[in-house]
Image 1 (cartoon, protein in one colour):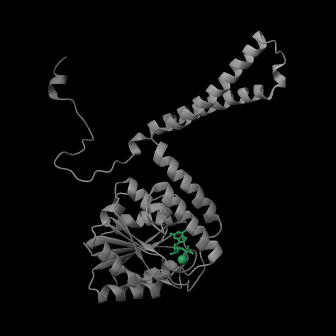
Image 2 (cartoon, protein in one colour):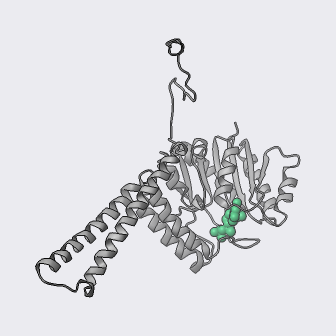
Length: 330
Ligand SMILES: Nc1nc2c(ncn2[C@@H]2O[C@H](COP(=O)(O)OP(=O)(O)O)[C@@H](O)[C@H]2O)c(=O)[nH]1
Ligand SMILES: [Mg+2]
């Protein structure tokens, strides 16, 4: 088992890779760490993969994984994590914006404070102010409030994990932005933060443009919603649906009463009539959505992974055969 696994997701970073690789080697050698570097090339269409092949030649520490097409940073991290052999897993960006010099400090903090995750904090961020810094402040604030995780820089690429953490979480979609949240649900709650240096992008261009605002923002809702209601959609849709239906029903009841006992005949002239109608239809729809959601989540149940921290004896029994005496009974 190595001391450190470095996982590097990348997309079109041919110019940065060998400089980054040399730098990591220097840091590891200087600190006498045993290590591996796992590059995950996410369907780059530049020469990134052939650079990685060259770096790997004669260096057993260098490992690589290449996707056939671009799946996104989350998928790359997820698959990279599966390969890790180290006790401590470091993730970092490939574009030289994160400094390998931070690795020993992150590892030290993780081990000495017995943490699950140490997340980097780009306190002095060397990026564009309007497209990166301000939106990022906003995201981090929202995420902090929503999930009660005290991190200033949730989406920092530079992080250190205990290996157990990365082996037990699933990062998919665009969820790499919220790994500390995912880890927290899985029960890895000891999350620390360390200020790290951040550098200007030296080569190439940023891969996360304007669309990341929209995606990131929607993911925030998804992650919040899924965390609360994925296993019980009826509690959300059914509850809301019943409530709205009930309001509509009361309105319809009142209008009916008005018609027969108060002599108000032209119900369809009243806005309230349409409102009541709409509420009842909408409520029924929501209720049905909850019901369908429930059926879907039931049929997916076996996929839910419950986190088991330790075991003493006992194993999952996959198959169960009837004992002898049942057969002999007839
Ligand atoms: N695997 C993978 N990595 C990506 C993708 N897009 C960006 N990256 C990597 O994620 C890191 C951060 O991306 P970057 O464009 O620098 O984002 P920025 O620092 O927020 O501007 C870099 O190492 C990129 O190569 C992608 O689609 N897939
Ligand atoms: Mg970058």
